[in-house]
Length: 185
Picture 1 (tube, rainbow, N blue to C red):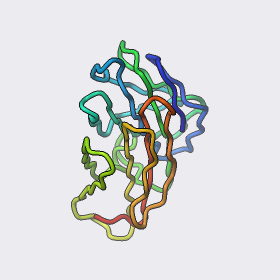
Picture 2: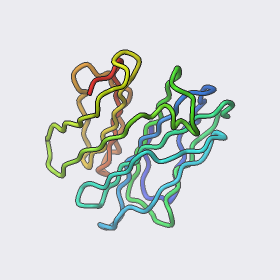
Picture 3: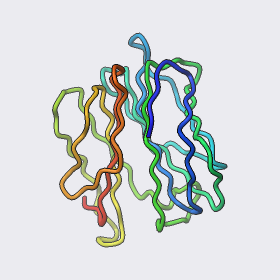
Picture 4: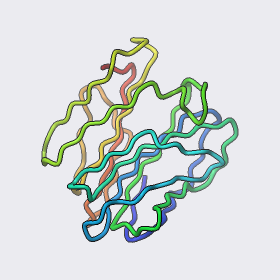
């Protein structure tokens, strides 16, 4: 996990994805001067990063992205987070990986069965995200990423294990990831 401010491009610390591991990168960006955050791309590790979902919040000044990647022989190194021609006020990120997932499809697509979002611009709100019925009640996991426009930590849901919680002091961006095995709807 990491955070930085005032740039058009950011590099994570060096990561070493395992062969055929699902790599998930959760990024929270905040635009400068009330602007709308620009598009984002991720590159590195000899992998192709595909955006699963994105959601604007905080009156449109902040945006959360979740990317996936998977490859048979990834390389170690930093992941570059590129912002399309725009300087952000701040950016926070968390890189997670898991093995033992479905390796079919391309770039981790077989490991992602569904993606659901929810949001609010209200503070101190508990959000519920409802998934469709799970195809296998035992052999599944639910991964959740939470973006926040305040310098705060998120509390994992009941039965969930927190993976990481990252914020950037003074810049109103934070991201938290958690998972549950087996997952529930």
